[in-house]
Each structure stands twice: as structure tokens, then as C-alpha cells.
Image (tube, rainbow, N blue to C red):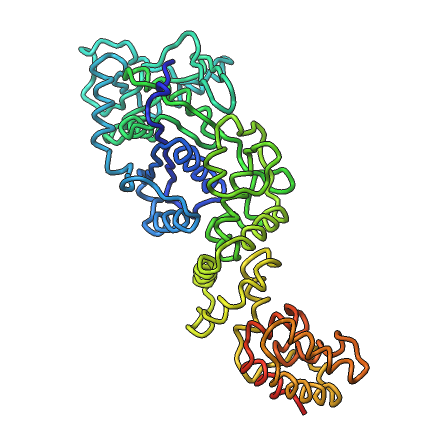
Length: 471
């Protein structure tokens, strides 16, 4: 089996079927292809395998493109439609027919079924062996036919896999697969090989559920005398219980993760680490991932989805993301979750609050919750539990505090001194004064520190909120 020379530019591809949402496993496959190509100065191509016209939908294609865009996986060139290459696929089938590497098979479905039933009864292999494989063309009937690959019957086909190692499949376990149906349409197994060859794909990185397909596809490459790409079949993602990932484990579609408020940078980091490793590194940047990623770092065992680890990594990315970029991510999340968008005043307020709140949030909804004080408007609505902090004594303290703060320079040092002065005058600890301040400034008990809120809100807004709740 020949492989692409290492001197060639690396070309990878992601080739989803537009029959539903972009599964998180597919998103990881796309990410691995993207990282490998980008890290080696190669190309990352996108092909939509839309030959199943009944199940393929424009909506699913749009969801795939949207998911890749959110995840930040840019591809080179135009999106390739597999359905658009039907004529080219048929052309290759006829080339193999002309060279004797394929043959016309006139066997009907009934004849194939009868063959298999007889084979079962005799305890033999049910792999269909067409009587037309070596038939004289002069005996061909005037009837519909399929074009089958004339696969080798002896020896073995070896998949030299960059993840799984050498995988050997005996040729007597592979049938003469159909390349072109009787209606002239190509099968997926032929189309994928022709497309990968024509697109110059050097590395096929995909889920290991395609591993057995690789043996059949290699035979097509060999029949056409084409270079065989490097195959890398990656283990699937399992749920936390070790079983195949499904809806019972929670979100499986990529768009669900966006709507739940996971930041794209955190998802990239987590998905890259899910099945691939670089030493003990858990948290890393895109630049590091591109530099480090290689096929030999991919493990052979299935990975387990760990939502706690996902949240921890996402939290670290939120903390280091530049404020303007983070604001854009938040607005994308709100749109994906079909929540009310921010107005101009709220955007400005949120930018001011981000340095204060982004260090302690794991996902974007938590971030917005912590920034609630900056996004809400007067009169501040106070939660029932928090309202208990606004008794008559506390309101009097707020009134006194308002007067003191009017004379303060708006620095943290002076604000702490002013609040401390009022607290001491009443023989109270800072916490006893902070509780009614939280109620007045944010309307809730769980907030950033009162000094951070005051600095974000500014003197005028802080005094107005305190005055609203003062006696």
C-alpha cells in the first residue's frame, strides 16, 4: 500500500452528512482535522456528503456551517457538495470497468437473497459471490446491472492506521462492493474515495466507526492506481458512564453547547484534550494546540465526556479572554439561546463589569448572573430574601453612607475608608454594612464585592441606587 510522500502539503477534510445536527463527536473530528492541517501549514477542506437526497436538508447543512463558524474552525476554499460530483464518480466506476478492475453484475435482489439463504443452510459465508465476476460479455443479458469492484479474493488488505496501528483484514472477508447502482448513481464507498483523491486529501482523520470501510476504500485506491492517504481512525466519545454517547447523557449537538453558554475557546480546548494528550497539559491556547497536535498523541481507547472538567476549562478561558472578544461571545450565546439581546447601555456597562466578574464564572450564563448589578436599571428590584437586609436601621446607615460617599474620591482605597468609617461609627463590622449595600446596588445577596460594584457603576449611579433605598 502506498502512502502520500511527507513532502506533500498536508490536506485534511471534514465530511459530515447533512441529515441532522452537528454531533459533538463530529465537532471533535473537525477540530482534529483543523488542528493537524493548521499546525503543519496545510489545508483544511469541508465537504458536505449530501448524496442521500431524501434525508439531507439545507437546514442541516446550515447548522453544520454555523457550528463550525461558532467553534472557530475556518476551512479553505469553497464547500464541496458530494452530490455535485455524481458524474465524476460514475466516470471512475466506468474507468475501473474498462480496465477490468470492475465488472457488470446482473444479479437480482432475489438471486442474491437466495444465494445467502443457501449459504446459511450449508454453513458457508454469506458474502455474495457474483456469478458475473468473470462472465464473458457476450453472455450479458439486456437487463439492469450494477458495477461491482473486482476485489482480490486472496491475501489481505492492510490499513496502515496512524492511531490504530496496522489493521489486517482478510480479502475473503470482503465482498465485491457495488460502486455504481443500476440507476447509474454512485455508492458512498466509491464517492468518498473519488472525492478525497480529487481534493488532494493526504490524511483521512475520522471516527473509528469507519475503520472497516477503509479496507474497501483502499481497494478502490489500488484499483485506480492512486496514492492511498494516511488513515487515522479516532475512538468515539462515550458518556460519563462509559456507554456510547447519546441524548440520555445530555447535550450531544454542538449548537446545544453554544446555547448552554460554553465559550468556543473552552470547547476547542476541551474537545482537543478529549482523546488526545500532550503530556499532562490540560489548559492551553489555540496556538499551543496547533503547535502540539499530532496523530501520535491520539489514544486508542474511547474518551469519556466529563462536564465538570469541561466547565473548569471553560472557566479558565473566560478568565483570560479579552473583554471585547468576550462581549461578542456573550452576544452570540444570547442569540443561540434565544434570549433578549443587550442594548447599547448594557453593552457598555458589561464591558466595564467584565474585569470584575469574569474570573469566577465557568460558563456565560454564570458570567451574566454575576454581572446582573451592571445590567439592571433603577429602580433596583430587590429579591425577597435580600429585602430583609433593608430594615429601618440599615436604611438610615445607607442615608448616612450616601452623604459620606458624596465627598469621596472614587478610588477603592477611599471607598473602603468611607464605608469603614460609617461602620465603625455604628459599632458594626463591614459585613453588616455590606448586606444592605448589596441589596441597594444589586437587589440580591450574591454579588461581587460592594467596592467592585461601586467602581464599575461609578459615583453618580452608586449614590442614586443607595439613595433609592435609604430612609
